[in-house]
Length: 95
Image (cartoon, rainbow, N blue to C red; front, top):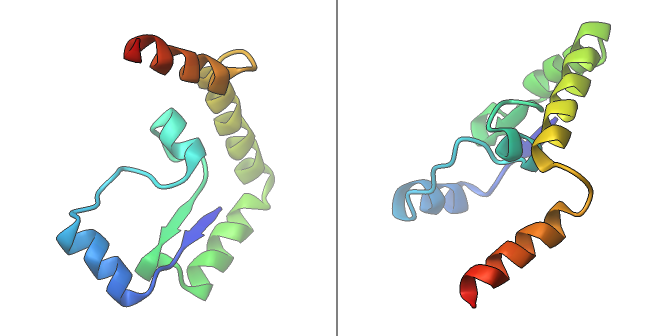
């Protein structure tokens, strides 16, 4: 589970002035472009929601779903060394 809370002013600046909008915030969800891990952002990050999400993740079905999502993330990353491969692709394009 990922929980993000910013100060009200920072959240307002990000939303209104910077027009910050991405589908997900956490790396697993960004890599797969699907909700692998629950994300509770700003107003959603209440004690009750955190409790409910944690309770779900602790069930056998919740754990199985989480592990399956991590498996999809692992497949998306490919073989070990994904960071090195990405860096080399960037360097190749800059050359």
